[in-house]
Amino acid sequence: MAWEVWLRGEKVRGTFARVLPYIVPRITAEDIRLAALTLVGAGIVHICVTFAIPHLSGNSAFNALDQALPLNELVVLPPITPQSQPLPFMSPDARYAMCRYDTSEGPVSIKVTLPDAGWLLTLYSPQGDNFYYVPGRSGRRNELNLLLVPPSEQLAGPTVDVDTVQPAGAPLAVATRRGVMVLKAPLAGLSYRGLVETELLRVSCGVRPPPG
Amino acid sequence: MWASRLQLYRLGRMAKAVFAQVGQTAILIVTAVLVGWLSAWYMFQTGSSLTTRTSGPWTSWVSAARTEADPYTRAHFARSGSLPLSADISRIWLARQDSEGQRLHSSCTYEIIGTPIEADWWSITPFDDKGRLIANEASRYSYTSETVALNADGTFRIALARDARPGNWLPTGGAGRLALMLTIIDQNTLLHDEEGTEPTGVPEIKRIGCR
Image (cartoon, rainbow over all chains, first blue to last red; front, top):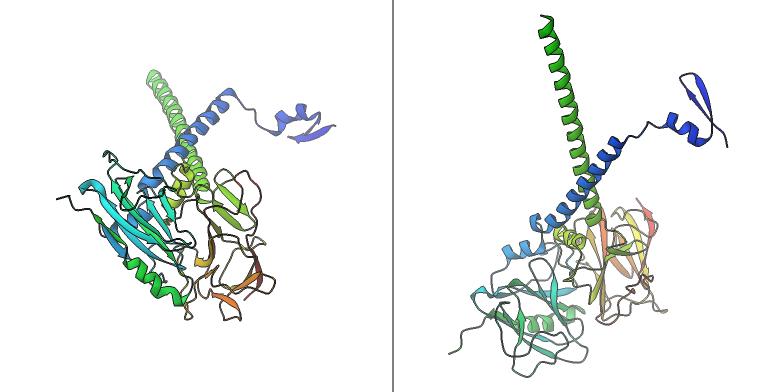
């Protein structure tokens, strides 16, 4: 197929390969080198920005909770409304109890009852990882006794396992330094609010007193 | 005199060359920074097939809150300020557009049409663009698997509108751009398969009309 290109009043006719140099500027080795350098630089910036954002962003959920919640103390949040919404995209179909913990001053004990399906106990790291969770089961009341310990400590006893059936009275050890415990209690309707609130108030979270 | 003029000429040529090189380097650096920043922004703001699943207007970050989450997912949620449940036990879908691809806005009326979702618990909640609940006098903010009224055939319809509607209705008045969140909690079954099969049961968002 023949191509025609007008260049400075002169018509150049031929195959596409013949007229291409008249259509696009000549690409030199220097241009290719510069383009490659730009791409490498862009790649480095891309990687740096992506990894830096979680550390530089002051907007993270943990930062917000770090300022709003007391340390090693349970807080039952009021019902989530537009006037009382600690975090964005927080669903109002549940009540929440939170405990910001730090095990540097000692193990933190958490005692929770998950009375039904939809209840959910979660532990979050400061980076937002939901590294531990226990969901409630339908028709089964799950009494949880957790002991949050610094990662360096070794405790004899059951270790963390989502499906472990906890021996009566023995706490499950979870190795973690800092984070947030979030207990989510579903609201099935207005008539269940009293029951949910009662269960939430039974939750305990605090530094375990030293033995003896 | 001619020698000094020649020296000046050569000096000028050198300066011109240096400026050209510096200019070229500056352009290269600025371009690299812009391209790198914008590409990173796109990846953690909007997501891609590497990090998200989509179904119609709904998008879900598949590694949300997982310990092995990729850097883009971590950056996304660090910026958003939200605290999602782990993708191991939940799936959170977010829609900022209707099923025709038009941006959700409070000046329009929508109908969310769905079939009952097989899960332990699910809820649908409208937020504004920044993730804030929409204030309204009716104090209606979401519907759940326990509270939504079903039709005789098992489907449900939820109206998103500024003014009250019969049946399931969620007010959106004055919120501007909207974001609709579908939360599904189910330890055993999620809506989609990890290997890319299309999710089922995600509701349709139909625009009825706009002011």
